Amino acid sequence: MAINWFKYSAPTTFYGLAGKLIPWFAISAAVLCMVGLYIGFVVAPADAQQGEFYRIIFIHVPSSILSMFLYLIMAAYAAMGLIFNTRLSSMMASAIAPTGALFAFISLWTGALWGKPMWGAWWVWDARLTSELILLFLYLGFISLHASIDDPRRADRAAALLAIVGSVNVPIIYFSVQWWNTLHQGSTIKFTGTSMHIAMQQAMFTMLVACWLYAITVTLMRVRSIILERERHTKWITELAEVKS
Amino acid sequence: MNKLSLFSLLILVVRRDLVLAMRRRADVLTTLIFFVMVVSLFPLGVGPEMDMLRKMAPGVLWVAALLASMLSLGRLFSADYLDGTLEQMLLAPQSLSVLVLGKMASHWMVSGLPLVLMTPVLGLQFDMSIEAIAVLILGLLLGTPILSMVGAIGAALTLGLRGGGVLLSLLVLPLCIPVLIFGTGAVEAVTSGLSVSSHLSLMGALLVLALAFTPWVTAQALRISME
Image 1 (cartoon, rainbow over the protein chains, first blue to last red):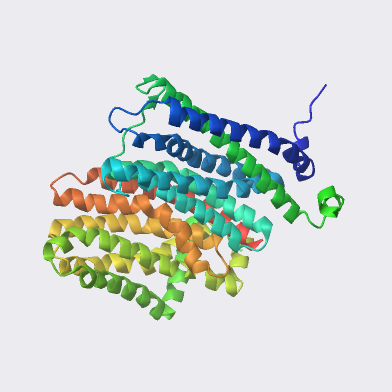
Image 2 (cartoon, rainbow over the protein chains, first blue to last red):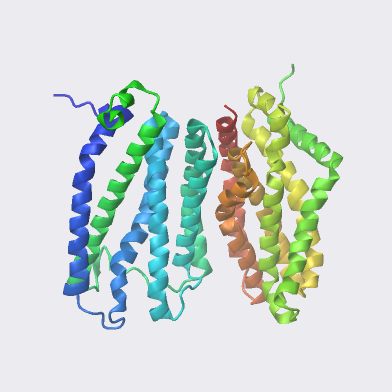
């Protein structure tokens, strides 16, 4: 039987699919978050050098990773919307942006909380902190450009172009900032093995998956609202049970 | 109609924009005055110690140049947009990218070049050495065209929006950070006796990259904004 892969690229069908998927993602995000926090706070031992302070890593690292990946995913959706002119892709891009900005902000915030006991300062002008801050600026630029254009089609296309230019610029910014100054510790987890305790790794990966699931849940919820808002004049929206009541 | 070669088209657009700019000299001067004023505010803000000022000078001059070029970007397309010329340019059979490149070049000559020419005087005010000033000027010569080109993308995207000016800075300034880093890095390198070639080469690479892509991206942005 041939599967029609494009069936769910229409907002009409995707709206229902997203509604069915949300509870699954939400519940597994909550469960994994609790498991991850339990391992992180109870099972994982205190760090030899950093004592208890290091435990903020379990939220800091996943949110940093997500903030970067979500920008790329957002840019990819935006590019798809621009190239193939698919409405849903643009809606997904604008649904992802606030979550990405939130993760960038959490990453900076937890980084500051971690930096105070470790480096003795809330903020240092280090390469990774600075590029994370710039990433937050890029998200805010995307969101505010989208918000200030009234015509949603033009807003989608203009913001998409900005996201693509931004994603081309991200590596340039990253390396220029890195040459400018560096103080942050290198990443501990490498593909060739790691110096981390096994429980710490488990906690971090569980939290990473939990954050992914959370991001997906929130994005799907937001994209449903966007679909409702944009398609409010269509017939199928007025026939929806939740709209009728 | 005889066919226009790309180069003569470019010259034509640059000449037209320069003539228009010369008819409204006040606009050109305000950018320059803004630049001088921002730079002069710093010693008043941080104190007159020469050691500190000498250290700060490249950063202050670069940031002021960045802000000054943002200030004039709003005018890049808006006049042509309001009187309908831009629509004619979009409809013209000639390449829109080349037209846009011409507009970028004239924008740089009007708002970037005067700043570069003013820099030696301001550098002396900050007690910079002659070599440092030379490197700063070289960096600005390579870097300010990038600001005009990347800024043009933002100007095209925010065309005709309310509050476009502030939004424009929000979009463009993060993208200009590498230029700022390499420009000030070069001056820092020369004052500490290191080679400046790496910073300036990277800046040159950015310039070539911008030259290759930004006219086309800006043309796409104009098409999005004008449809």
